Length: 292
Length: 284
Image (tube, rainbow over all chains, first blue to last red; front, side, top):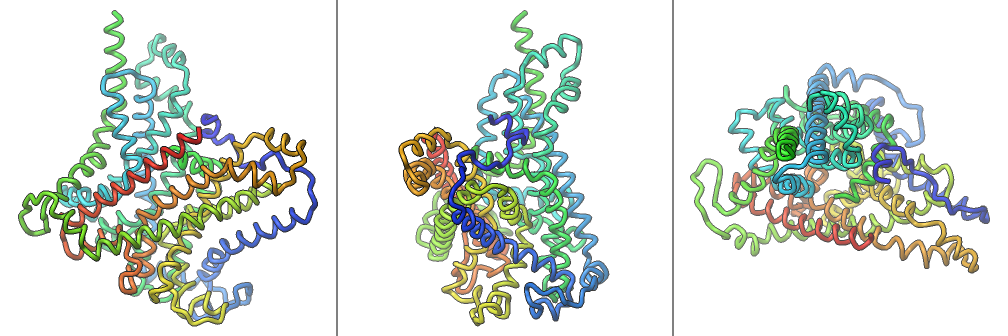
């Protein structure tokens, strides 16, 4: 069951006990859902619209009206007078680098924990479990002072390092690989494959599904992260999109048009990842809630 | 020979685990321990640290600023957990009853994956004095700048952000209810309301409780929204623990005290995690 969910095969479906009922309930049901979903979506749609409107019209134009003076001015301003490009590149570099390291480290440790017997395994795994419930605040102060001591403040490395290892990722990969038959690996070893070759040729292809899910979830987490980059990035040249946007409010970009143009820039990659991996991400959240 | 094989297996296993765990120890396990050690000192940036035992915790126990932040954080937790779990149950139920409702859970999930900074911008523009809400309701409240509405407004923002996550958890629970319960009830002549009241709701109670606990633990670590929307104000009515830690650390440079608050926060989170574990276990 868990296995199927991890692979993202289990879809959010209607539960099977629905039957033909008086339609009025069904209709009320849909009205309720449309109302709630509408309330959720309106602020988002409005902010997307605002990115293409002159600041003077953002609040004036009726919510449902599309008769604004549409313009790309906010984006032009953001790229010309505010360093949107720098923010975007920093965010991209940091998110991709962190995601790649999370994938490799989670799979490696998850594989080790699931398929091998060695002394101290339970103690080491307990460290991972404890970290799973540890709030970031509990590590953030020594982490910051350590980063400063290592001279990594205001560097990409300093921003990437704390998100490079994911307790959840290790846990997830271990759970998945626990269900892998040992024979497969033994057969390869008997055929003369080295441990590294087994990892490369068997384990990675086998875990493509969960790896893709972990990649999506990790990318979103790092891309959206605010507190740590806020602490470590201290110059405009190192700001990520969330940090840059929040700190530019009031300096370069005093108007809402530019802010929302930058916001759109910050949410498009997140939305794309979500739309592509929608099922896997939602299922993953459903399980992660239960394994926390 | 068997001993040699076992050794080889152990060596291979450790070679996959240890490099990662070393990094893990460096950026997670060790910092937790150091946080605790700092919390027992009067470490302030720029001066020599001295061991002070539990003095920081004694100070916090009577410090009105800390206690107020603790209460605000708990209020936020309860404010998110109660409406969050009930609303998630209602919406999940509606989604599970209709057909072709996947689109609703997808849209409701978008705020969960949205950058929290961007959500803060959107809600800042929505809730400000001449913002969207006042314009459309014809009101003049300064939602985020008045003591009575600032905290509820923040809770609303968090509810909007997280509800999709809670719905998905309840939906998973609803899918786990065996259809045979409902079939048996139908044979006994139960109507939809009775089935809801006597089957769905009792079976979902642990799931709803579980969502409530998750919401509380989510609220414990909230930083971005209060930091950007209210800055902890007005008159500290929205200053949460995570915000207080940030302030004590970066404005007052009192690393010892900040660490003691952080350790307290970790203990509360650990307590909530244990509750969560007990609820999950009782469900099985």
